[in-house]
Image (cartoon, rainbow, N blue to C red):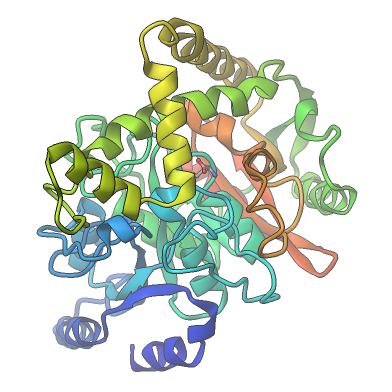
Length: 446
Ligand code: GLN
């Protein structure tokens, strides 16, 4: 823990952490030492980790990357935080992220951009950019992230680490500040599949405090890591390999798929005709849900309050106007518009119908194959400042990840190699609750 705390100080310029909880970390490490001395050698005991600043941590600032929550001290722990504390993991601090998890580059954070440790003029990806960069720079052994449309997988890919977006309902959302509740899912980020499995083991499981949490037993994720891949059927959606995919990234993905064939897998082309509708559907559904979720930040109950409000409306409008960033405001406006009377049927209902078509595409494809593989992102990490002025281009960074959230499926990003000297992630998408299979597939590649 001390070594990691020192390393965090040394690499402050990467801007991975919003808060470093040094004192709490040293206390937790001492406690873990005591438990180890008593013979408790469970996997995460005493392991220094860090939490995305979207998870509520009792007594510790929980900002969600926003000025709105810059003064917010959470009064309770998220279930994920409780579980990791109970497993003996030592929290080093809270990680930088895009404001309210809206972004693909970590540039929308109130606390400034995170730098990609591989090349510091590049973005780490987002919204879990602080998590991915911290793990890649060895500032924590592993980290938590959340993924609404790609926010675990895309930064994992851009920083050359492993990330798992679990099945919707597998990891409790209690105490995880909501962005788009029907899409949000917390998950583990680490250097290897083995470490990812260890973190996932502690994070997963039913929680009665989350009404969408699924009551199914959690398998032993370590136990299946070494299973052979002979006979594994891989589906390759032709829509993942068309125009828009950078040629050098495509080469790395092809090589990775070849490796799997050498390990005994077979490949088959599959088609997902509705995939092209994923981004437009997501950018109706996610902002719609965000506009409802973020209405709780009103200057009365949580966080930022403007000075000298003249009346209630002034209090609401100035508190929100002065503390939400540009991207968050854009989402609230889009969502409010899509949900308003007269537009609801034309946008929101249509988007929900498309969501079903996309789920059916996956269902049909996964009836024939065990997993689907493809790229995580269309290119490698882009430059800081390169896309932030162009929301549409930024939204297209998630073209291969967003559909998976609409379907609620689990998917992983596995470090697959390098293109132009920058990390490339291979995406592996599985059937519902097949996280164990995904971890096994990732481990065999590593
Ligand atoms: N980039 C997407 C968005 O801004 C996804 C973010 C996420 O997964 N939290 O909505």
